[in-house]
Image (cartoon, rainbow, N blue to C red; front, side, top):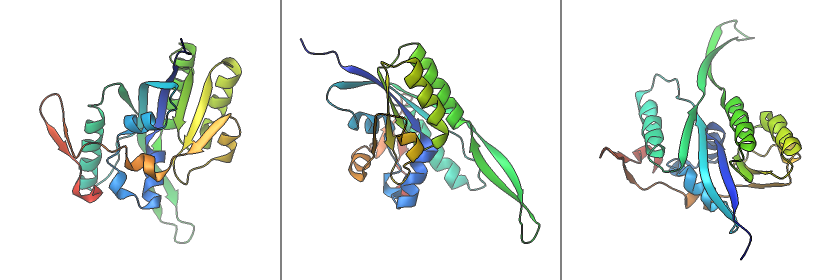
Amino acid sequence: MGEPAEKVVAYIDGFNLYFSMKNKGWRRYYWLDVHLLAKNLLKPNQTLVLTKYFTSRITTSDPNKFRRQNDYIEALSNIKNLKIYYGKYKIIETTCTKCGSKLKTPKEKMTDVNIATHLMKDAYQDIFDAALLISGDSDLVEPVKTISELFPKKRVIIAFPPGRVATDLKNVVRSSFIIGRRNISISQLDEHVMKEDGCILTRPNEWK
Protein backbone atom coordinates (compact mmCIF):
# COMPACT_ATOMS: atom_id res chain seq x y z
CA MET A 1 0.00 0.00 0.00
CA GLY A 2 1.15 3.56 -0.74
CA GLU A 3 1.65 6.41 1.65
CA PRO A 4 -1.56 7.87 3.15
CA ALA A 5 -2.69 11.14 1.57
CA GLU A 6 -1.41 14.32 3.18
CA LYS A 7 -4.26 16.11 4.97
CA VAL A 8 -4.53 19.75 3.91
CA VAL A 9 -6.56 22.61 5.36
CA ALA A 10 -6.75 25.79 3.26
CA TYR A 11 -6.74 29.23 4.91
CA ILE A 12 -7.84 31.98 2.53
CA ASP A 13 -7.36 35.70 3.11
CA GLY A 14 -10.46 36.83 1.24
CA PHE A 15 -9.63 40.51 0.77
CA ASN A 16 -5.99 39.83 -0.10
CA LEU A 17 -7.17 37.49 -2.85
CA TYR A 18 -9.95 39.84 -3.99
CA PHE A 19 -7.69 42.88 -4.32
CA SER A 20 -5.10 40.86 -6.20
CA MET A 21 -7.75 40.04 -8.82
CA LYS A 22 -9.03 43.61 -8.80
CA ASN A 23 -5.55 44.97 -9.46
CA LYS A 24 -5.23 42.55 -12.38
CA GLY A 25 -8.58 43.63 -13.81
CA TRP A 26 -9.98 40.12 -13.38
CA ARG A 27 -13.53 41.15 -12.47
CA ARG A 28 -14.90 38.21 -14.47
CA TYR A 29 -13.33 35.86 -11.90
CA TYR A 30 -14.85 37.39 -8.75
CA TRP A 31 -17.52 34.62 -8.62
CA LEU A 32 -14.76 32.37 -7.35
CA ASP A 33 -15.26 28.97 -5.73
CA VAL A 34 -12.44 29.26 -3.21
CA HIS A 35 -12.83 25.65 -2.04
CA LEU A 36 -12.44 24.41 -5.62
CA LEU A 37 -9.48 26.75 -6.08
CA ALA A 38 -7.76 25.19 -3.07
CA LYS A 39 -8.47 21.71 -4.48
CA ASN A 40 -7.01 22.69 -7.84
CA LEU A 41 -3.79 23.81 -6.15
CA LEU A 42 -3.14 20.45 -4.47
CA LYS A 43 -0.75 17.73 -5.54
CA PRO A 44 -1.97 14.16 -6.24
CA ASN A 45 -0.79 12.91 -2.83
CA GLN A 46 -2.81 15.55 -0.95
CA THR A 47 -6.46 15.69 0.10
CA LEU A 48 -8.36 18.83 1.10
CA VAL A 49 -10.26 18.23 4.32
CA LEU A 50 -11.46 21.78 4.99
CA THR A 51 -11.32 25.32 3.61
CA LYS A 52 -11.46 28.31 5.94
CA TYR A 53 -12.35 31.60 4.29
CA PHE A 54 -11.66 34.85 6.16
CA THR A 55 -13.45 38.05 5.19
CA SER A 56 -15.44 41.00 6.52
CA ARG A 57 -18.77 42.51 5.63
CA ILE A 58 -18.03 45.70 3.73
CA THR A 59 -19.05 49.15 4.91
CA THR A 60 -20.53 51.00 1.96
CA SER A 61 -23.27 53.41 0.99
CA ASP A 62 -23.62 51.60 -2.34
CA PRO A 63 -26.42 49.01 -2.00
CA ASN A 64 -25.26 47.22 -5.15
CA LYS A 65 -21.80 46.54 -3.71
CA PHE A 66 -23.39 45.24 -0.53
CA ARG A 67 -25.75 43.02 -2.51
CA ARG A 68 -22.94 41.55 -4.62
CA GLN A 69 -20.84 40.70 -1.60
CA ASN A 70 -23.84 39.30 0.25
CA ASP A 71 -24.81 37.06 -2.68
CA TYR A 72 -21.24 35.86 -3.03
CA ILE A 73 -20.88 35.00 0.66
CA GLU A 74 -24.26 33.25 0.58
CA ALA A 75 -23.09 31.21 -2.41
CA LEU A 76 -19.89 30.23 -0.60
CA SER A 77 -21.82 29.27 2.52
CA ASN A 78 -23.57 26.63 0.43
CA ILE A 79 -20.30 24.73 -0.13
CA LYS A 80 -19.64 21.60 1.90
CA ASN A 81 -16.41 21.60 3.93
CA LEU A 82 -16.04 25.37 3.71
CA LYS A 83 -16.36 27.63 6.75
CA ILE A 84 -16.47 31.43 6.76
CA TYR A 85 -14.98 33.59 9.50
CA TYR A 86 -15.54 37.32 9.83
CA GLY A 87 -13.34 40.21 10.80
CA LYS A 88 -14.73 43.72 10.81
CA TYR A 89 -14.39 47.10 9.18
CA LYS A 90 -13.18 49.95 11.32
CA ILE A 91 -13.45 53.59 10.30
CA ILE A 92 -9.98 55.16 10.39
CA GLU A 93 -9.91 58.95 10.62
CA THR A 94 -6.94 60.76 9.11
CA THR A 95 -6.14 64.42 8.52
CA CYS A 96 -5.20 65.67 5.05
CA THR A 97 -1.72 67.21 5.28
CA LYS A 98 -2.54 69.74 2.53
CA CYS A 99 -5.97 71.06 3.48
CA GLY A 100 -6.42 69.86 7.08
CA SER A 101 -9.77 68.24 6.39
CA LYS A 102 -10.75 65.04 8.17
CA LEU A 103 -10.95 61.89 6.06
CA LYS A 104 -12.79 58.77 7.15
CA THR A 105 -11.62 55.56 5.48
CA PRO A 106 -12.93 52.05 6.20
CA LYS A 107 -10.14 49.57 6.96
CA GLU A 108 -10.56 45.82 7.23
CA LYS A 109 -9.39 44.47 10.59
CA MET A 110 -8.90 41.13 12.35
CA THR A 111 -8.34 38.85 9.34
CA ASP A 112 -4.63 38.29 10.02
CA VAL A 113 -5.33 37.65 13.72
CA ASN A 114 -8.14 35.22 12.87
CA ILE A 115 -5.98 33.32 10.39
CA ALA A 116 -3.08 33.11 12.85
CA THR A 117 -5.38 31.85 15.59
CA HIS A 118 -6.90 29.14 13.41
CA LEU A 119 -3.51 28.05 12.09
CA MET A 120 -2.20 27.57 15.61
CA LYS A 121 -5.34 25.90 16.94
CA ASP A 122 -5.61 23.48 14.03
CA ALA A 123 -1.92 22.58 14.22
CA TYR A 124 -2.29 21.86 17.95
CA GLN A 125 -5.41 19.75 17.36
CA ASP A 126 -3.66 17.88 14.50
CA ILE A 127 -6.31 18.83 11.93
CA PHE A 128 -3.79 19.08 9.10
CA ASP A 129 -0.47 17.71 7.91
CA ALA A 130 -0.04 20.73 5.65
CA ALA A 131 -1.65 24.16 5.77
CA LEU A 132 -2.28 25.86 2.43
CA LEU A 133 -2.21 29.58 3.16
CA ILE A 134 -3.57 31.78 0.37
CA SER A 135 -2.34 35.24 1.29
CA GLY A 136 0.42 37.72 0.68
CA ASP A 137 0.12 39.40 4.08
CA SER A 138 3.53 39.72 5.74
CA ASP A 139 1.81 40.11 9.12
CA LEU A 140 1.50 36.31 9.05
CA VAL A 141 5.26 35.74 9.17
CA GLU A 142 5.44 35.18 12.93
CA PRO A 143 2.58 32.65 13.26
CA VAL A 144 3.95 30.71 10.26
CA LYS A 145 7.43 30.65 11.82
CA THR A 146 5.98 29.57 15.16
CA ILE A 147 4.13 26.63 13.62
CA SER A 148 7.35 25.45 11.98
CA GLU A 149 9.14 25.66 15.32
CA LEU A 150 6.47 24.00 17.47
CA PHE A 151 5.24 21.45 14.92
CA PRO A 152 8.29 20.53 12.78
CA LYS A 153 6.44 17.65 11.09
CA LYS A 154 3.77 19.99 9.74
CA ARG A 155 4.20 22.19 6.67
CA VAL A 156 2.84 25.59 5.75
CA ILE A 157 2.59 26.11 1.99
CA ILE A 158 2.12 29.68 0.79
CA ALA A 159 0.02 30.26 -2.32
CA PHE A 160 0.48 33.92 -3.17
CA PRO A 161 -2.40 35.66 -4.94
CA PRO A 162 -1.26 37.23 -8.23
CA GLY A 163 0.88 40.29 -7.60
CA ARG A 164 0.88 39.77 -3.82
CA VAL A 165 4.23 38.08 -3.18
CA ALA A 166 5.66 38.92 0.25
CA THR A 167 9.37 38.07 0.31
CA ASP A 168 9.60 37.88 4.11
CA LEU A 169 6.70 35.41 4.15
CA LYS A 170 8.26 33.39 1.34
CA ASN A 171 11.52 33.16 3.29
CA VAL A 172 9.99 31.40 6.31
CA VAL A 173 8.48 28.44 4.43
CA ARG A 174 9.97 25.62 2.38
CA SER A 175 7.26 25.72 -0.28
CA SER A 176 5.52 28.65 -1.97
CA PHE A 177 4.15 29.57 -5.38
CA ILE A 178 2.04 32.17 -7.15
CA ILE A 179 -1.54 31.30 -8.11
CA GLY A 180 -1.88 31.52 -11.87
CA ARG A 181 -4.74 32.89 -13.89
CA ARG A 182 -5.70 29.45 -15.21
CA ASN A 183 -6.37 28.00 -11.74
CA ILE A 184 -8.57 30.98 -10.90
CA SER A 185 -10.44 30.80 -14.20
CA ILE A 186 -11.27 27.08 -13.82
CA SER A 187 -12.39 27.48 -10.20
CA GLN A 188 -15.60 29.43 -10.73
CA LEU A 189 -18.95 28.83 -9.06
CA ASP A 190 -21.86 27.77 -11.27
CA GLU A 191 -23.65 30.72 -12.84
CA HIS A 192 -26.67 29.84 -10.68
CA VAL A 193 -26.22 28.45 -7.18
CA MET A 194 -29.21 26.89 -5.43
CA LYS A 195 -29.17 27.01 -1.65
CA GLU A 196 -30.71 24.32 0.54
CA ASP A 197 -33.79 26.48 1.08
CA GLY A 198 -34.36 26.69 -2.69
CA CYS A 199 -33.11 30.26 -3.05
CA ILE A 200 -31.14 30.76 -6.27
CA LEU A 201 -28.10 33.02 -6.32
CA THR A 202 -26.79 34.26 -9.66
CA ARG A 203 -23.41 35.64 -10.68
CA PRO A 204 -23.77 39.45 -10.74
CA ASN A 205 -23.92 40.97 -14.22
CA GLU A 206 -21.02 43.24 -13.24
CA TRP A 207 -18.84 40.14 -12.77
CA LYS A 208 -19.32 38.72 -16.26
